[in-house]
Image (tube, rainbow, N blue to C red; front, top):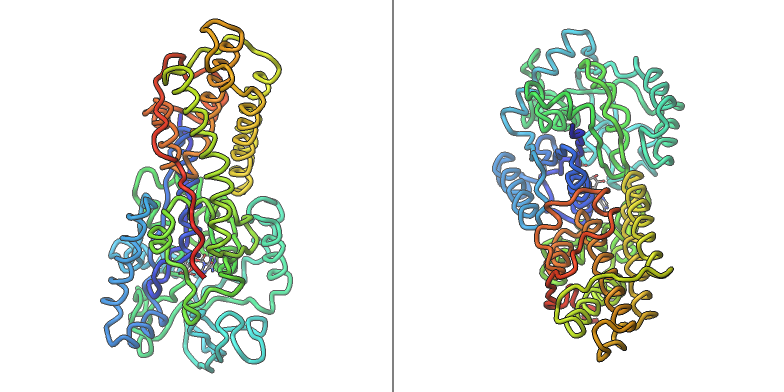
Length: 520
Ligand code: MSP
């Protein structure tokens, strides 16, 4: 029976066009879904747009349009971008979608009925950027740490979700499940927040409609709308088919969330306790990544350095950009994006290493063996070594994906490409060019190229979740058009000998043309 796999990206605020931060998470989610499908798992993914709250109202007002029209436009832009980049999730949830609104209201009612919500008077410092009241720890010199703007003093009657009841339970859950939040530094950060709970308390989950009308109405008090984070987190359930899709329970039991480090608190603290209040189990895992800085500066609208994925596709092709994102960032840490660095890395890894391997191996098959994969007739140490290295590589990649370290997985694949290049260099099969068929030199050259093609098949299979187009390109050149569709990871990558002798290859155009650095 196939296993369920379910991954989410955050749902992106519908006030900004897709940028490098969104693209990174969507690429990682897409890679994981492809990886699991390649394993035969039943994989599902959710992404979407977060459309309620004051931030949207502010942005819409600035442009003189109403929030519904404004968020509709940005949401469309997101959907268009992900479709163009072949990053379409299984379900795309808009928080304005009536099905989602129904879920939020049904959940609010249930949590209210169960006594988890209370009406209170509240005064505090509110940051519109964060869409929440701040605590001391959220501020530096009187300004919001994340948004560098002064919060406003606000006094309101709010409904509070009685979250603090469960901090003890949450701490125990985190302690009993060391891998629940990864990498470990973020797990420690959450334990730190829980240890010093002065920055935490119960969660205000309503806004009076007199101040903010753009949101989901509380079903038990129509004068208030729901706090945007409470509404947004529930999108993960909506996207998984909550409440009545027969696959919902299975998907939920496999739920893994991908988030950036700035939204750790809502995901690691609010969300598990919300789920508990609803009577649902916690998600399976939370994976937290760092920030992309651009040319060593923070990404921001005012600096205009958000990096549009469509512009990157236009300039370099999307897969080189996708490769750079996955290869450069060590998941969990911050990374720096720069176009020079992208060009250098892509040229070194893809054009010079992997691309060159494909073109020289197939060129040699075309020149020396009429374009037909020769049989392997001998097995010396070097031949056995490339076979063994294929197995090691599959294991390294499998472990790296399991630990959510895409950069290490790609490093392992590229190391294997280097090995194969070296193997060809040492054997120099081109020297056998004019030797008689059946001669020792010709047999050895045939074996070398056979194994190189076989190694390339393994690379194509392992690479497919990371660079689907390039993987298909390798498969087609190897004369194995349906390779990706019919193969399963890890077994087919481990099993040597699936490029039959006699297969006709076609070198074709360069798989990864060299990129040019941008002009100064
Ligand atoms: N709408 C909320 C998420 C709600 S999830 C129930 C939100 N949206 S966002 O559009 O502001 O951010 C979406 C994701 O992009 C977050 O994970 C955030 O960390 C990520 N990034 C935004 N800028 C980023 C970088 N410069 N680098 C990497 N990721 C960053 O938060």
